[in-house]
Each structure stands twice: as C-alpha cells, then as structure tokens.
Length: 324
Picture 1: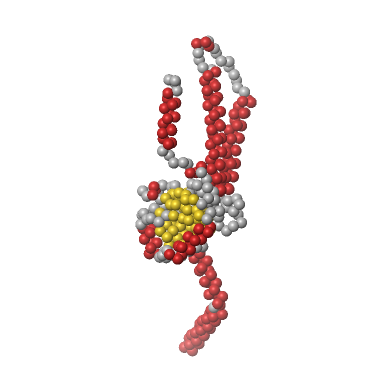
Picture 2: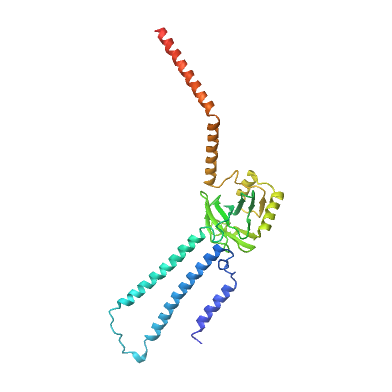
C-alpha cells in the first residue's frame, strides 16, 4: 500500500483538476466537418496510446526479468552481436505508423477543405465573417442583412464563411462545427461548415491578438430553414440600415454587444481582393459600354480633329511659302 500512495495522489490530483473543466467540445461534433476532424483526432490518440502501451509493457517486462537480485549476482549476460531481423522489424514498424497517420491526415484535410459529403449539389449560403478589435461582423449578401457578435445559420445546408480582418490576424473557430481558419487583412479565406442539429454553438477567435482576445466570442445559432427565413424577414422589416458612419464607429469601438442591421457594409467597404476585382470588373464593364455606345462618335471626333490639324498644317505651310 505504501508503494501505491504516490500514484493515488497523482490520480486524485487529476480528478480534482478535470472536475472543473468543461467538456471537450471538439469531441462532441454536430456536423460532418467536425465529425471528420473528431474521428481523426481519436484515431491518432488510439494509435499513440497503443504505441505507449507497447513501450510501457516492454519496459516493465525488461525491468522485471533482468533486474539485479542477490540470486543472480554472478550473472553475466551473453554478448550478442545483433539481429538483422529485429533491427529490420523495429525500423519498419515506425515507418508504417508514420505512413498510416500521414494518409489519414491528408485524407481528412482534403475532406474538410471541400464541400461536405452529401451536400455537393446544393448552393451554399455565403456569409462574410470579418473581425475587428475585438468583435465579429457577419454580412449576408444574399439576404442583405448584417449582424455583429452573433450569426444565425440554417441547419442541413452548407454555409461558406468568407473570412477577413480589419485588424490583426484572427482565427475563426466554431469547435462543434469544424476547425479554425485564419482571417487576414489582405485576403479572403473560405471555410465551409454544416450544422446538422438545431442548437446554440460557441464561436471564438482562437488566435491571440491583444488585450480583448478573451472577450472575442460569438454565438452561432443553428435553426431550421423555416425559422431562419422568418428571422431574416424580421431583420429586414425591423432592423435599421447600416450606414458608413455607423460602420466606422463600430470599427473604432473596442467592445460592443449584439447588433443587427437590414443592410451590409459590403457596398462601401468590400472585402480585400474581392473588392478590387469587383471594382476592376465594373470599370471594364463601363469602359466597354462607353466604347460600344460611342465608337462612331469617337471616330468622328478623331476624324474632325485630324482634319482640323491637317488644314492648320496646310495653312501654316502656305503662309510660310508666301512669306518666302
């Protein structure tokens, strides 16, 4: 009993510490993306646990079998040059383990970077999720609405979050729906998630970005398609419009509560790169229209201008010739 005392104390300490911890939400998936990642984590844990079990069993066996006692004080172990087969086995086994883990990781990474299986034939709901110190802005371009510090999504439909930042790099993460992805100021990254159960999920920034990092959380509310449509209709009919001045005030205010608007900031503050592309497309379109609608007029102006220049040149040459 005396030898078991330290182990019991360690076990009791872990039990006390873990009793105050919340459940690991990453291991409680509520969507296909999170389920793929959770299965990958558990598979890796079981493989590593198996490796540790083999190592500890061999360790205990060797300590027990070859321990020094008074009964074998004169024992001298035989000299062994080595076994090629044993060396080959304990070289191949780690290689196989690494290959298996690599294949599983690559396949799961490819799976979570595409549209979840079973939802390939439907159009995803696009939501722009932008961060600023220290809040989240969610813009719905299809619905023409915007929310701050909370996002509502329909169940059983792919939601494509397009992520960017108005400040330092942040990390968008809803643990029960999928893994995190960075939001940066000079590009838009995409994350596709599906919620298969109507519930409230905690979302947060998982990348430290300053003193307001701990408060940078939001609620992701998954609701039935009917309830989602009703919520969108209520927002359009009751919420105020988001003006440029109001949006600038939001960006400059460190901490704000939940807010809802019946318009988005995408029209006057478009996402990086996408906004440039949209501007270039509009400029090209306007240029094409101008060229196609006034080509005859432009050609006429060019001809008149050239004719005027030719006439002026002829008059100047005639005057100089007369003076000479």
